[in-house]
Image (cartoon, rainbow, N blue to C red; front, side, top):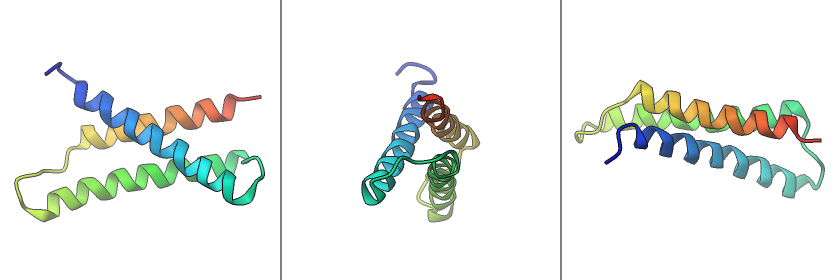
Length: 88
């Protein structure tokens, strides 16, 4: 395995989750999302990442919460948010 690859995968997955949440919001309203709505989509993805880490820790089946996984989740969500906010 390539060192740090799992963090890259986390960032990609949660960036994608942010994009999917935005897309779902767009298709349900058929109107362009404003900056606040895009930020809400990113927050939903970030909170989901945090919840997943907490659940992994609480399950007690050998999985642990990892602050670096959560950090990668957050970076991925914020990167997609920034890209969406820059669009014309």
